[in-house]
Image (cartoon, rainbow, N blue to C red):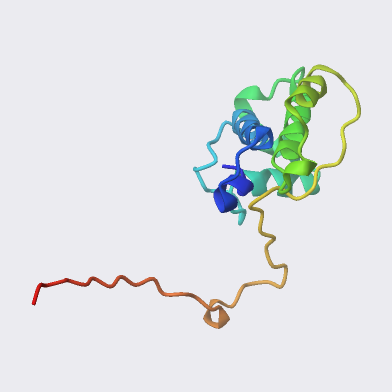
Length: 146
């Protein structure tokens, strides 16, 4: 779900681009965005972004798709997928430009941080005792007539 829809209820073509990017990353990885088991990444977007920045994108590709003749295409799909899931709708490509990106060998712009990506702390173990948490509570009220 695109962040502009999740936070503001705004739908546009760029919301569809975001969803397409998530779908593209799910296909390439062979994992659903909801199957959270990514090394300290919040979701598939963060996992793809982390591997991309560490020049380890090949690890993101589903082993069933690891054919020597398709690695280049899979890497391009990851790149395009990351372009589609950028935080700001104005930073995302249009669907027509995505078609061009996927069907040609033209140079692609560098992606920016994806939406819903939280960088992890590099200071070692997080001290959970110092963290602030909110407590969710439920209050039930019965209204009785006088």
